[in-house]
Length: 144
Ligand SMILES: [Zn+2]
Image (cartoon, rainbow, N blue to C red; front, side):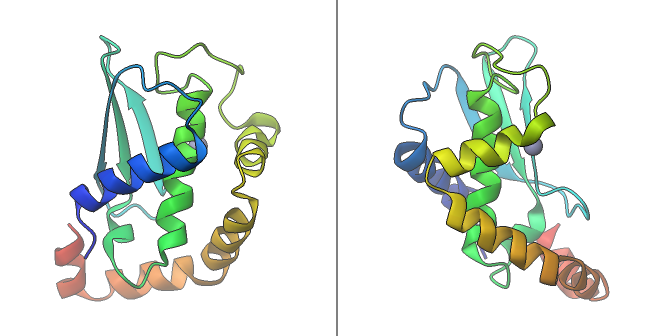
């Protein structure tokens, strides 16, 4: 099982590898959260702007989910951070997703191939995986 500490290390690795030009201007916290059906990640800025919370779907702790899913989910939230959504950085766009700005930015940052793997896996496996986990109480309890 992937831990919150592992997640924090992944965030640092992806930030250094693909977002080194994006300043970390506040305290960025990342952790696994709920077992959401239709959302993999979320990014929120605290009112005082000193903290950003990146929440990752708790099901992504499970080893059955390929690492690329976690990687692109984190990178997706980092794109929002870079664009000034969920971060104190200047806002680059009016809306966080409109016009495919997240996907374009992921391509620009050398993550296009991984984004394709991510999209393919989600399309082929996500809902079956989700239903399978939720039909199994024991595994659901593990994933909180
Ligand atoms: Zn998003």
